[in-house]
Image (cartoon, rainbow, N blue to C red; front, side, top):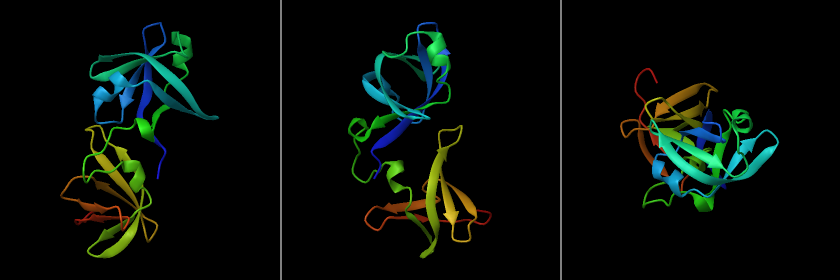
Length: 167
């Protein structure tokens, strides 16, 4: 089970006072407005930062951190991933799950294990794509929509999928 969840990727500086645009990887954009503490995933480890401001520009959150106060400092943060602790994650509804928690689950099609859920990514249309390492060491990309992902069983640690020709 993951202790930290990625909620965005730092994109580009906004203004000269150390604010930076965030490419969100969280569906709930409102979450950024009440964000207090988060973590930057730096090469030498996670660094805790404190949010002092939040606004939105063109649908993207723009955050200011207590630890960074000018454009030169945040310019170096482009591409850095932004995380929150599990305790600060958005609460789940019945039947929901955190994507990070299902990595490593067996992927099953037609009752047979075809591989392991290795990772996930999002495309430009904000759709989640599961990356499956198949038993034959090939990779399958499965769009997380009801037509292809039939269910996730957290007790059995399986993701049941419907494969179509060409997948």
